[in-house]
Length: 111
Picture 1 (spheres, rainbow, N blue to C red):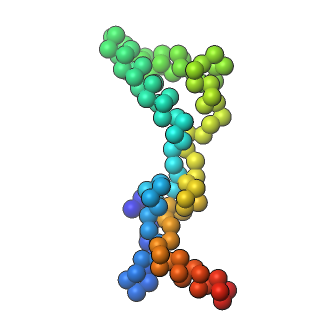
Picture 2 (cartoon, helix red, strand yellow):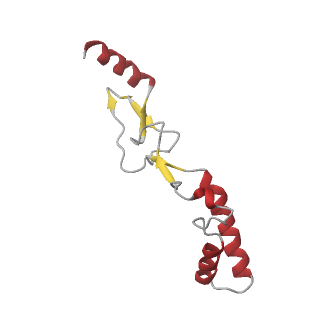
Picture 3 (cartoon, one colour):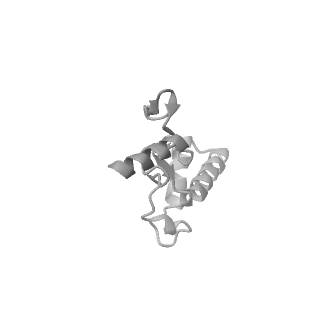
């Protein structure tokens, strides 16, 4: 389990489970950043192969692929978060099991 999530159980029956969308992390990575991250890693590898140190290669690649520059192929990322609160679990890291949903419906009836 991630982030010290404790699954609530009652009489040995789990009422919730780790969220399959975020795997209990409570946040998800924005897929729009995947292409940028892969391209950046590839550019760093190219520069290192050409003889640059890793630090210099990272600096140069970031300068070349600056998503804050309107001329950049990655300008569309400006303002896009790299990660966001998981929509599936609303940032809890867990979702109700079938049994948990039954309990919630019961509570709604009498609450």
